[in-house]
Image 1 (tube, rainbow, N blue to C red):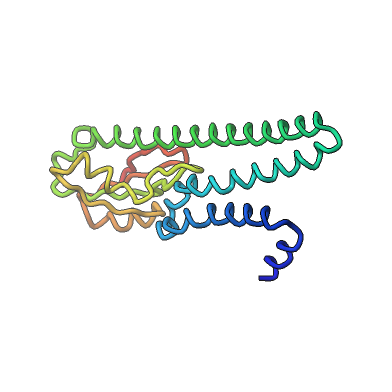
Image 2 (cartoon, one colour; image 1 turned 45 degrees about the horizontal axis):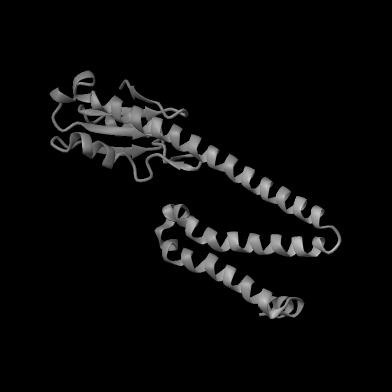
Length: 200
């Protein structure tokens, strides 16, 4: 309320209405997705519309203030700010694309590695194999890898012969729990996301 009173006195009703609309367009589209937790940020593009309108409003105000003294300077300043904003967004987009590409490579390597499990790892001769996965990568920087574990990915490959899986953050804990099960296999994800089988 204090902020509302201070801001409303310093700007016109029309400008205050525009700012209020921008804020509402930023907050309201986010509300339905906040309960989604970790996946909520992927829906932030809906709220970005309000942010874009606010940036345009600020640029217009800067332009009109400087335009009174020098219209070329005003135009150059607006173009400079716009160029910096666009280049920043492009760099961020490229970074996110690289993150998702690397995360996709981790997933692809995992699926390919496990695809030959029945042959190379001897799953075909094991009854009810139990797989212990250590340090399962949940995400790589801004990209998701296995946000809910590897169970869903393995189900697509071994749906006809379901596997029992366990997730661990410690190799020692996985070793201790696997000692009592001769059908257990321990897999460890490295820092680079590559998977390797650990000898018991």
